[in-house]
Image 1 (cartoon, rainbow, N blue to C red):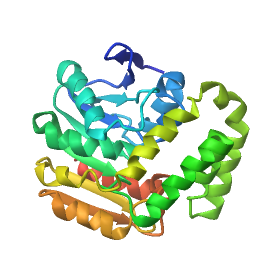
Image 2: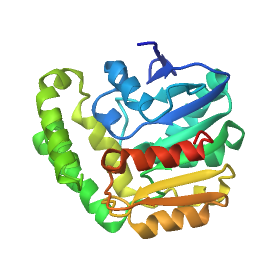
Image 3: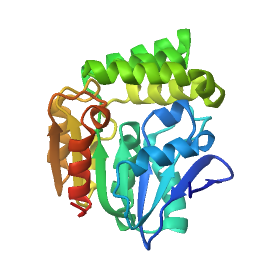
Image 4: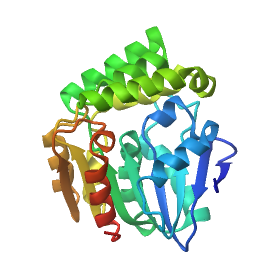
Length: 272
């Protein structure tokens, strides 16, 4: 499998790149990278994201990982500034994709770096958690502290609404755990990142009006972290945005309705 890995900012952040082309796409990944760094499992990461794109996709794709020593007082806009230093130097203007937790970094990035943001895709992400989302977030933090990341993964798997997909994913994660546990980060990485999100559930709202790039927001209509109203308000406050709801899907909408999500993503990227 053709890919390259590395680190930036003196080894603080891992990155992974694959594909080729003059134009670029940069992914800010979801919270699974807080649990298992992409630097420790690059082959699987490449496989996951290749499935979201056409086989002949002609952009170089970068995935930027997170600092395993992240602190609970680390603002997402500070992470965005670190990412911007790398993208400005090594990548250039790109389509920015923020997935779940990655959207919390992508929002301030797009606001603060319009010259580097060709388009913005927020996949199952909004500017802030709903009230139920805060409760869920704090529950996952408590589970991580008391029972570890394996139990956290099981709780996240339970967010899948489709029973058969949920069973399949849970069995897959159960079978893979003996290998995966050797590649997991300390629980503190997940705990600290989620603690900050829970403590400042609407801290990203001031960044929305400054986003000038064409933006697509995709959310499940039964998302457990972000309510319909949060998605709608996010779209309303970003000037040039479109909101698409995936019906009968929770927060793991890309797992529950992969064909529908991919269709909307390709349409937004001008590839449908």
